[in-house]
Length: 386
View 1 (cartoon, rainbow, N blue to C red):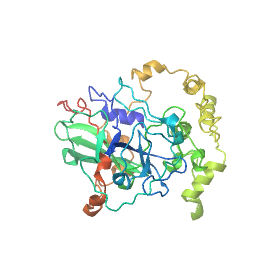
View 2 (view 1 turned 45 degrees about the vertical axis):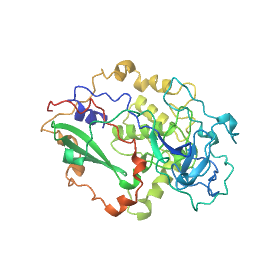
View 3 (view 1 turned 90 degrees about the vertical axis):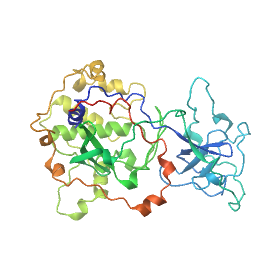
View 4 (view 1 turned 120 degrees about the horizontal axis):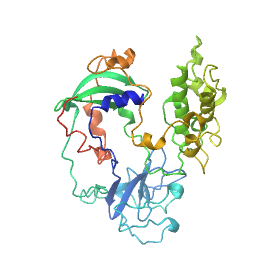
């Protein structure tokens, strides 16, 4: 799949994605700098005193005084933020570095400690639009000169589909460049996770069912281990031509997502006999149901264990990182777009997008999307055709 994606963009002379990021959104209210956060433990709103709960980022937290509030309550906070007030979490007071434009945010390890709740009521609080506005960290004075919309592209063909998105082959009208465009289901556009660093864990239940790791299904805290599991599933599919969890049965009860999860948790994975010893060994390493024993998951050695594995020993990792290695397979291009390299299951689909429901759009807080878009100024500037 990576090779096919590389084919789509191979004609571009320069693609500079380094430095691309989704800018952190901070919301100013009465001196508070609120940021959307995910709370791992019990947390209570400092405005309405009710529990903050839900999936993904359930509420806001002031990065200065650590006040926790619901998203719906942050615009109602009457208390002025006091940067040096006595905090319920003094050890987590954020530090500012004059040499760095970014705010050194506190760890989410203690996000669930309740802040002293306020007994103030919502009534009579004036919504001051001057004090309530998203602040895009690092974007001062920067304007994106290139705004693109669907009207700027010709939708050519569907080339892939998953449980949460589909991928379209598209042409940019102004220069005939060809791109792959991912179209995400509308109900999932808010699902994200930010700020997870090395050693951090989360407990969000998400992912494509066939690739979900056992620790996610068990409801455990997890980190990068789930990505090595997913890589193992993908490698198994590429080597064996099928999923390690294929379920073929006339029993409708065995063709459900719940049964698939049961298979992932309980059934042993059988490696095909026709695979080499090295291939079998690396698959068993990635598909170990215990994340502590999984290949690439040792705290001290981690990725080094993968690089030194016999299956990958022939790879020059430095050249691979520089994109200077010759791929073992190069797709044959027999038409303008190379569509014969994609499954007809997808390419035969009609190219269409779900119409927008204006009533639903009006009810969505558009400030959620402030700073979301990143357009590389060098990526779409060439006028050469593919």
